[in-house]
Length: 151
Image 1: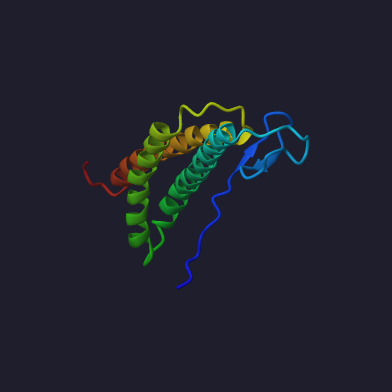
Image 2 (image 1 turned 90 degrees about the vertical axis):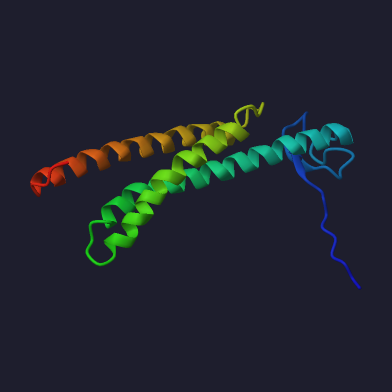
């Protein structure tokens, strides 16, 4: 029986020239710097963590940006009820994702611009969430006053 083996080669930045190379190399193909396998594996671990942090921050950003869309669509007859539930779910999921990101990734030591952008993106996402909480509360109050229903 044939078994499929996946190559465990990972990438990291060369400490000398900053180009991305893989952990199977004994020397950088760009600058010729010798690669220490242990150092390469540690650098690849950091690179993997940066990639995961950026990916999860992007999911958070998409989720946060879906909140105002779901809220607006919730006012459309026939489909609004289901989307309204989606809006409420997004209000719960977004801060959970934010907290998860800040528990898992705040201590990565890197000067990588993508990681810094991911950090910023998480704060923008929670600001969108907070703004939508305020919009939701104010709009609910206004709608209840217009309909003459006490709170």
